[in-house]
Length: 124
Length: 301
Image 1 (tube, rainbow over the protein chains, first blue to last red):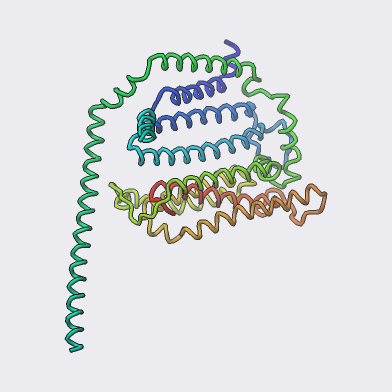
Image 2 (image 1 turned 180 degrees about the horizontal axis):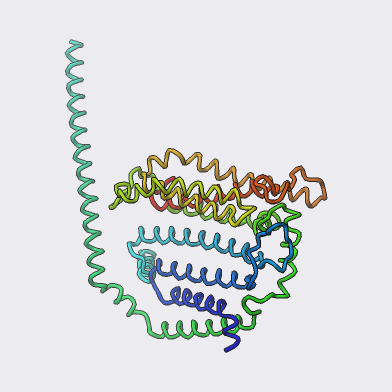
């Protein structure tokens, strides 16, 4: 129990991650799958930022030239989260445009129907 | 005789022209009614599907329940493993001695070496500039993929509810768009002395552009951002980033004296290459956001 209270934000992040993963596994609608992917991303961002946080410290913007590292939180995870956000935006845009094209082709967003229709087309 | 012929032919030609015009009009009306029919059909279909989700049920019932059970077991196992792993990590909010070295180095000598007061800006645009270059290229590649997938040549866009007729949105946009744009520029330019930087400021600028084009119509927004300008500005910003960072890495690796000074930390014009790089990244992010939005909305910039 002590361990859980000490790692509260990280555990919340992992629960968010699994919520996204279950959305990805259990839904057949492509848009819902993309939403699940974004929830997974959010969980990971929360995890990375919570790793860098140190309580009672300031944001890593140097005040009055005071470069004592014990005053500021860790700046490295902030930069890594930036990368993650950019990649998440790119992946979301590409997957959305792909599902748009699939909808234009098959007039459905259900993945199973798309599989069946694609198999039908291949047989023809 | 000649004039007679001429008259005869011109009459004939005029007659054919009129006939062709009539045919064209007919064609237009036919296509119009056709599109209207399709629209109503689509609406009926969607309404029908909303009322009776028969199809969905049929498909999902054709898949075995064992899939759901195994998926649930998988999810629970993954959740337990992840929480167990997280619990063995250092606690939240406590100084992590293993991660201390790098971050201490960045905070301690970052201001002196890069000239940036914001340690994160100094880190992502000076020490880890390759990383940020990769990020901008990821965004640019994503834009290119979306461009390839969604580009069309159709001139007009069918919109059932054009937002340019929405008075509330237009009046609100008149007030808020200039403020949003100026704030985005502020965030970009102050990236090295306060929270912010190229990515956040570029996202704000892109949001402002999207609101602008949504409220005032594509024609007015298209006058500012034409396709040619879009391509030229985007590639120029990426190229500038590559060349300037190549120079600074070359100079740094060979222990030469760089002509770019870090300046006084805390001033707007300081921190060497960080401010121009921030501006380049801001332009890339802003244009990419706007480009992706345009591709989804109308199939062209």
